[in-house]
Image (tube, rainbow, N blue to C red; front, side):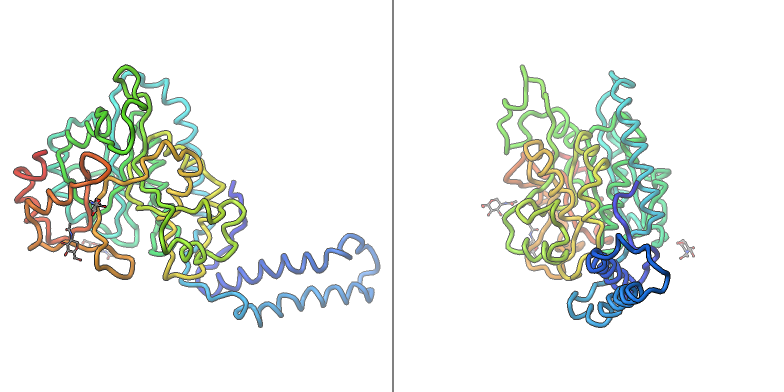
Amino acid sequence: MPSTHTPSSSSTCQSAKLSRIFSFSVTASRIIGGGGGGGGGGGMFSAPFVLTFSLLLSVPILFLLVGPRIFPPTPLAAPISPSDELDDLSLFHRAAAASSFSRLASPNSKLKIAFLFLTNTDLYLSPLWDNFFKTAHSSLYNVYVHADPSANVTVPGGVFKDRFIDHAKRTYRASPTLISATRRLLATAVLDDPANAFFAVLSQYCIPLHSFKYVYSSLVDSRSFDLSSDSSANTDHGVRIQYKSFIEIISKEPRLWKRYIARGRYSMMPEIPFEKFRVGSQFFVLTRRHVLTVIKDRRLWKKFKLPCYRDDECYPEEHYFPTLLSMVDENGCTHYTLTRVNWTGTKNGHPYTYKPDEISPQLIRDLRKSNYSSSYLFARKFSPDCLKPLLKIAHKVIFRD
Ligand SMILES: *[C@@H]1O[C@H](CO)[C@@H](O)[C@H](O)[C@H]1NC(C)=O
Ligand SMILES: *[C@@H]1O[C@H](CO)[C@@H](O)[C@H](O)[C@H]1NC(C)=O
Ligand SMILES: *[C@@H]1O[C@H](CO)[C@@H](O)[C@H](O)[C@H]1NC(C)=O
């Protein structure tokens, strides 16, 4: 069941604002009317009743008048409708329930990587990914695509055919809809195949930086790939005993306070005090254990699904996952991502997008370099017309490890 009340059918910015003011005023009037509320058994139109009633009425009106001054203007919030929320909850519930049986169901199957693509345009670079998967054994991976239904995305052939998930819903920038879409992908992949052990979130602008074989062995087999942790701590007689999620988790960031405040000064309390608020890329690789944590979560989602008060610092998808996982299992996460991104000289929250004339073997080699692991495995963002030059160097450079 949804654990919080969401204003119903507030589809526009204005009505969302009004609902928020209204629900505040309801609370306020409850407090004000609290004293006499219990004993209201007298005559129907008795003077005290009328007085109380008009007092109650005046409170919402008062808030409608002064509310906009007290509360900062609400940005273009895309509220998640109760029916969408219920649809998601039922999916997450099924996935979590199925998962508790799945461990027994397939003891001998090989671990798989689920590649989760989040897109609101065509999958421009799909031929490159087709080549990436061509060398892989089909029993080692699954592909899932969440396509914004309003975007009329063309379903490409190859590995993406029939891999578009049901239940996909509209996504908006600066809103919790991107968190929902990611959770939907994770839950679908958990439910679809009990052998899915790693879940890599990607977008239409991502490229692979290595062959499938390299990616698979880095995540599944290698004991030296992760440079940040002492490999002996995670192994027992040379066997990996616990996998970590490759998710960026940053606590010291100059803009973090602004991001926290953008959600509303006290809106994250008491579940998420500022000291526990984290930021990190939404392109991560999670273990199945952590995916279950994410799809079972209600406590933090209750807060993160609320719209921001300011849209210029509103990227809830960059906070929800790192905050949740650092609260639940900080040591089970690497705190860094495997998806390279270039933030130099960018504005408006968009990273640098590579153009066709920049594609070169040297660029691929540069993008692989990581301070935390043997290599980055993926990179973004690449413009759609990068496809041709990327295909040209795919076999000689990208898939040559
Ligand atoms: C969706 O895309 C197809 C193919 O590109 C096009 O024929 C169709 O008119 C589009 N529909 C809408 C509603 O945009
Ligand atoms: C990052 O982007 C800048 C342009 O903003 C570019 O000059 C630089 O070469 C890029 N770095 C890498 C490693 O690609
Ligand atoms: C690695 O660390 C060095 C030194 O702090 C830094 O200059 C460099 O940009 C880092 N490289 C990457 C890929 O983050």
